[in-house]
Length: 425
Image 1 (cartoon, rainbow, N blue to C red):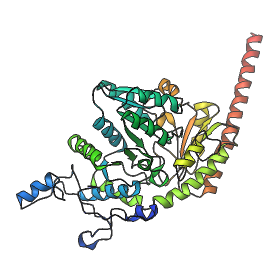
Image 2: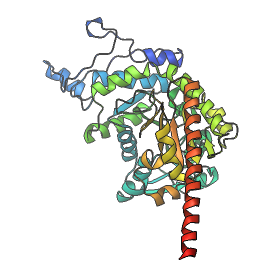
Image 3: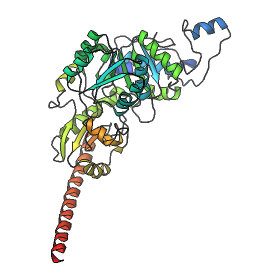
Image 4: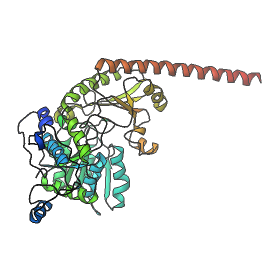
């Protein structure tokens, strides 16, 4: 059962159409054309037997909004349409969704295999929280598929994948790793936040459970937190039970905002990806840039795999600047059409270094061990005009180069003055 409400599937429609109509081809109260925000904590029944059947899930309906809610159920049905999933469970945030899935399917004595290159919050669960539960965690080099396969073969309960990765945009071969996991009898979980269901459908590639931070591209407006998990009903029943008891349920107003945002996902992503490609190509020519990460570039190590398993390359670009954090501190404040903030996927372009965004929870030493330098900047490309974003980034780099050159000359003059003073003395 997808959710505890009556929904109508829309079959072979395109993804943009599903983003608009998925879960909403039902009659709303008062014949409203938009999904209502149902804020009731509880739902009353005069017939005790009917109430009992609903409580046990034998009949459709709602009894308490921590367990299920009509607005939230519509959102769950919508992500099911986009990911072609049987069932979905909504959480109060992306991290609540990730944590909920891992705690649902792992217990003391279990083993999870993943990669070093994952979102900082996820990494903290692997490094700090799961070991406390007695779960063995093995993190492999992200692009060493052979090492990942060897660790899976040693015994694995859950294989956790994130592709493209945050913030270095590495791409994992999902089909290959799923095959290794199935040989070992492991459950495969994939974070599909960066790709979105428009660009990548992990369930179709053999993954068992897909996770989204709905805070990001799905909502698209930087004004709500939410997480979504989807897969087979037999698995989602377990995830739903964990959420109901642990309480990290999504509230109906947040669900409404995510539903509204998802309706324009295809339009937003089309413009965002166009600009992301243009920014990535420009960054490859910028003298102050050491390296550029974007799966859409033919030079990207995962480009061929991305072409095989993705329908688009996403709207996230990251790059490493020469000079590290000192360069970042000059560059980012100069941007005019960008927020410097710890979010992504919004209509506005957002820049930020890893140490204040994706890996703020990690120490400098931990970030360096993960291969994340202080000069790495993540760009979440918005829906602004491509030409405006390019011009803005170019002027920021022009200013930064000039500023660093002036600082270098000033430091050189100061050093020479100090030396002359020492000689005179």
